[in-house]
Image 1: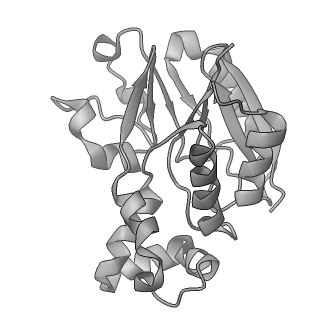
Image 2: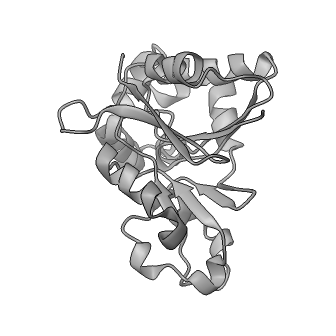
Length: 227
């Protein structure tokens, strides 16, 4: 039976990502894997995250990717100045190191071109998949891409009249495993699930794993950081 998985906020944790996909999920070509952004920064091997995505796609695995705010910061860093400093202050140096690069311009163009091509949301069955959140206080929520990348603490603004029976799955804001499980328990009522357990955060209790959510059977899977 086909399965549909969502994973968010890999943040350069390439070994953990591979372990989750291959050993925990045991992904099959008939499955669908949706990645919700933030592949780069903080962790040790951002380059290998993209290489593994492409490896999966080359072997006919169905992998689709969204942009996160860290991808946008990376692209903006090419302009230099404050944009570069913002990116470097938020994990960009680790990304440069993974490419053996001194400057953003040294990152091979195929990676930057790929990042530039990424979507901002997917609608899959009854789900809306997005990196950070959706601003439902505007006329056309699905056209406000900046909000999809950056929103935090937006649950009090959910417009259930607009959302209808759909469920939003997102990352961006790291929360504990306990909170993720609690959100899943309440998902039919709240219609939202944050699946970011802060894979790169190894010093905080109940965090530091990469989380996957299986959409069809509403199951969670966790892989400890092995990077």
